[in-house]
Length: 267
Image (cartoon, one colour):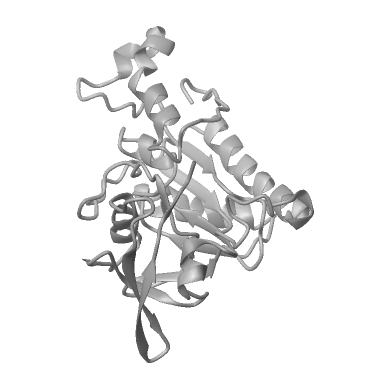
């Protein structure tokens, strides 16, 4: 979004799983793509306020209980705006403040741009041939598109520019890790205040399922690394060697279980 009234740019990125490659390239080469707007870009490379917001939709086809809206902490603008626009849509929503996300929105947040990322949660068919069209919630996806469209229209027509809020990055967290190892574990990104990573499920016949990991397990350690949050877990997976057995530790109710798991390749 560039001028008042703001332009709205629709874009799709490749290379997200390998480290947000497509979105990062676009952001880093913004001056080359839009040389007429380069005067508004700071010497530090921050794109705000030339770009005033990034609305990200990543995995929004499987609405079940709640739509998760992430990045709320990137601007005080979002809570009131979401409440106002959702009044006519009526979606059940979970708000998450964190702006350092394992999705392309993080690229733009690191460039000083307020972000709002829509997500309906991981599932056991994620990254498998079993993720077929009949499993999609088409009505839910339409409602999500309506909500995000109303927010985009508001941003595009308003004189109000969302204020950027800088959050402290979690330890060891920058852009998305380049994940080559695969466990088939499915984090619950709407897990709330839990020490560790709650799993909403595990992919059938994946390494985690073969090891005995189950839905509702809480991962607290992987390959000798303590797991307190999704960032710890992401970077622990990044460090795994494909085909090399390691240990995963989970809490299951009152039990702490140690299991051997052998990562597979994502390729």
